[in-house]
Length: 108
Image 1 (cartoon, rainbow, N blue to C red):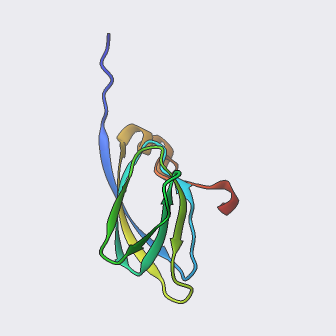
Image 2: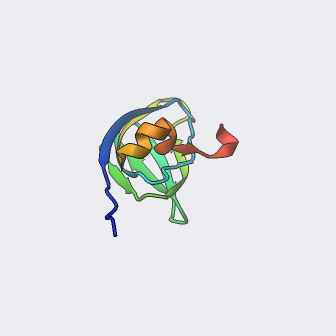
């Protein structure tokens, strides 16, 4: 039997939320670590309770996680985060950004 080969890649994204910005999404097969550089976010993953994430805090999203609420908590100030995603290189080469993030349909 041939062993499956996992060829991981790290992709880092800077995500900027305008005031009141929102991007509910999923990450398919990617694992994600995120860190808030500026501002405050509202964060709800799967059926977990919503959390208020402040500047300097971080979180992890497992593959397949549904990030149901991913909102800037401010109506007047922008927010910025850095997300580092670990994904399969072959899938990323084939599908590009669609391998990393799928925005919920109502926000497309």
